[in-house]
Length: 459
Image (cartoon, rainbow, N blue to C red; front, side, top):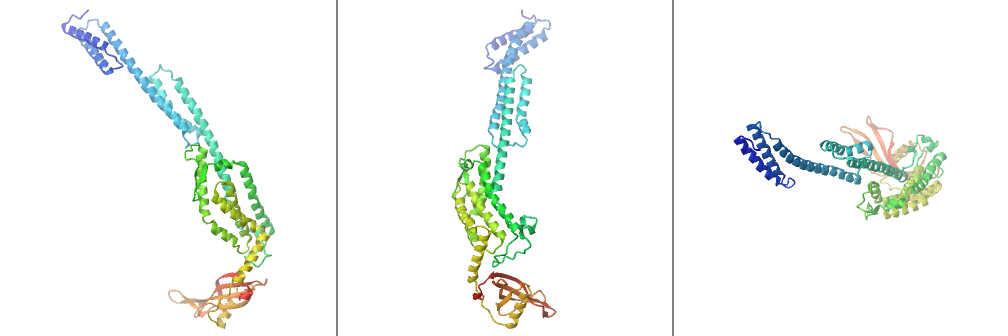
């Protein structure tokens, strides 16, 4: 039944036309048009109620509620789909996290919490907006991720611990320190009651035997350490991780590695071999200096052997590094040639005798018995109790030394040949000095010198 008021009738008929139109619209396809007609229905109903308040509009209101329910259900469905899509994107991000190789595993609980907090917050909002939706499956996915992520972090932490152990062991075994008296608190334990002079013609001179035995025991311990290391790790596996380049550096055998252990090991090996490669460039000169054995100092013997041993060890660890192997082979020859301390001393003695025969007494620039006598006096004041055999003056005259105002002294370069009590002859190239003291010169003294053995026939 229509309203009685003419104006209300007009709105009633317009309401009916809007009903016909909205019935023909699919809200899933034309949501805007559907909502527009729904607004027309509500507007007409409002005007009818205003013009004719006594008119029963319950039937009209029921029609509006029917269509409103349809569009609300449609909107709610779209909102659900949209929110589910957003949640699933967040869950998909979990896969990316699980594939990540650079992880902070110092605080596993914090890592797991930080990873799931955003998605848990989104799920809480989703449940509030869609209280009828069952979110158990979503929550189970988060729970599963938490377990997998924690497992990955704990595994990574364990692997990293293994890698740190490997790095520590590598440096402990390979980066061998020099051996010498400075490594020990009790100097006397190494030296005994002697003062080393480095004299090559004193084959009986030696540090305390206890000190030598101690250093020898340390040297002997390194091969044992290497044996332990080789048994502890699969070095074949380690050497499959890299390839050696022409310049001695290394690169990953496979650039597409993603494994955390491989990644960390390659980074470590790269840095370590880079240091080794720079040393390889100096190896030739180093070998030459090893073979040119110097004065007999027990510390030098052990330092040289430990250095050679380091290269030998490197070749056994980095078995694919051919340049290391080449240098190691040469150092192995040196290591074997040195033998024990007694053999090393004999090498020193032989080399010293050989060098002494090649040393010549420098020619005198001039002769002056007074200056030569001063040089002899200056030398004898050193207190070495060596017999002066010859003094050659290496300059034509004294060299005066001045400050900004006056002369403070004079110096003369001299060559002095002297014989030690052992019968060994030494050549000293020295600078003799006298201080100016109130217009006269002080007693002469040797201010600096260098020395080497010289064959007596060459004096």
